[in-house]
Length: 385
Image (cartoon, rainbow, N blue to C red; front, side, top):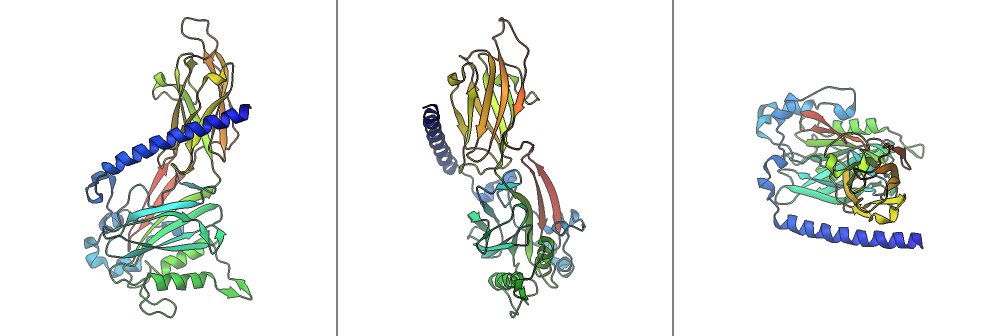
């Protein structure tokens, strides 16, 4: 009976959250700012900017391009690379959960009708997908399935790229396979054929690094190339939701995993997740304690690409004592025990907390973005905390 009652509560809360989210989406669509007027929300990167940040590294994900920059240096200042928000591949805090198994690709490309998305997993599998560019210069592929030739991408580091052929509409120097003026479609087909090459009845084994280097060699690093390439990284891993901090609302931004809490306070529960917002819900529930049933079930399906979520719990009519708060997303969970003290003026007891983690804790991840634009590169780091 208790499980049935809990399930009904969760369904009611999920419905309420969904209705609120739809209302918010409707409002945001009605007041949306045109792409060309976003100002600081959208960042443009010119080749001159990128050349200033150019670095060298033995890691193929951090190599600066060479030939394309040397061949086109005369007019490089007049060309503009794709514009983008925080990231083109909409991962959550640098991760994509295997339970979600999809990622959204969104950005802006100029002077081209399509771009080629290519993802390289740690076992050498390659996923390619052509994405159309609209009249306004934007491209978007929602829910791109992380499956290559019918096989899911391997868990671990994924190098994710977006390629534009530049003004000449050819990839590299145009010579790919049997083609002499290869466009994106011809290049994608030839590259997949290379990846699938067989020797002795078996597919030739190549590492992620070897394939990424080969991809660069045939595109932005090919002699005479004016291709544009943007590369990012994310980690493909199991779903993870954790509670990072519980505090009374009055504590504001006080530090520490758990702050002293008293009867009558409103509890603010904050945590991290790598699940996709809107497609998933984080439920937060007080599962044990002297008057656990007095707490309402809380839920949210709204958080940013940093993965930070937040809910509130009302402790107005509860008894003092130790309570267990649990957060779960349907695939992973985490719990923390907190002691609620009597109201000010009553006998107080020492605040104590213990953590009981049912899913691996820690930072959800970090996100490194690496961008290549016909001879320029820059790298920036984003942290989940």
